[in-house]
Amino acid sequence: MKSTSHRLDRFISQRSVHSRSDVRLLLAQKRIWVDDAVADSISQRVTQFSHVVLDGVCLNDKQPVYLMLNKPKGVASATWDDQHRTVMDFIDHPQKTDFHIVGRLDFNTTGLMLLTNDGAWSRRISLPQTKLSKTYKVTLAEPLTEQYVAAFKAGIYFAYEDITTQPAHLEILTDYTARLTLVEGKYHQVKRMFGFFDNQVLALHRDSVGPFKLDKLVPGEWRALKKEEATLV
Image (cartoon, rainbow, N blue to C red):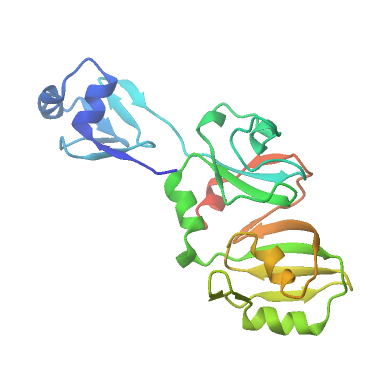
């Protein structure tokens, strides 16, 4: 979702009886406040989260919201789906309709999902340049060997796109399970990396994205992130 900003005169004209040409006089009379300071320019930028007050009346006081959810299996990573239950069906929040998903998970993949109404925040998390690590627990059909560890560290070649994945850290937990940490999010990347060894992924669970860890949320449970948590990226 793209975060937008508007000129102050346009913003005021859209949310009050005043025209854009009226705003110069309102400014001169110090009748407009933005984020607890007197506004001083018709071209001042106002975002979706700016606190705007005109003549003591609040015109906009929308707050950014950040959530984490433990996505269950068999749930669509979408805000709406006419055939399947979606992650939004688990959210009970007054600003729910404004949320979008930050980094999707496959239908049968479980674990950490982030949701927000702040487009700038979600872009920071999603941009490849940010290089936020993502950690997954993987269950495989065939036994794992140290060859996997070396191959994942070196990078796996995807012939279709003619690219090699960035180095990833694979920790073997048991013969059939592993913890994988990577900094990319290519289409079906985890399944395709193990597919290099003709090994089928039976279960995939995301534990963390960057500084955000799933904690003890049970499947289908969510919580709001604290302000200090959200500002970690």
